[in-house]
Image 1 (cartoon, helix red, strand yellow):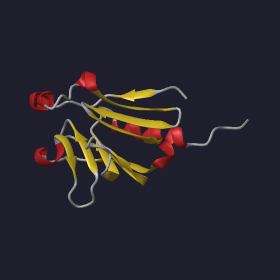
Image 2 (tube, helix red, strand yellow):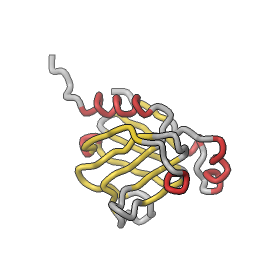
Image 3 (spheres, one colour):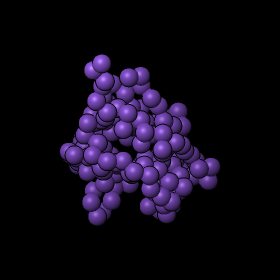
Image 4 (cartoon, one colour):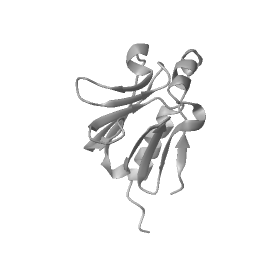
Length: 135
């Protein structure tokens, strides 16, 4: 399958804050294809096999203080990469993945991304996880 790209949705009122964190449209996005799921959010990255994604669902809207920028949930250690409060996609993993901190010592059971096309990303994950037609 071809690599599909999903840009983050940048809400105008938060662009300056995100820019200060080195998070810009040119330095962020989600890529899925060839069995791999990759996210870049400025200097932060997450990568895992698509088969490691247990579920993906549309969520939101969010509160700005809990959504904008990179965040780790105190409740479950889930990671969020937020560029808008309008909504995004919450992913849960079979095996936790490294993410926010550079050494990869903290592993995250979930990830929320605020892409422009949440439904398209969910569909792309389902397409990538679907077994190939042998015929």
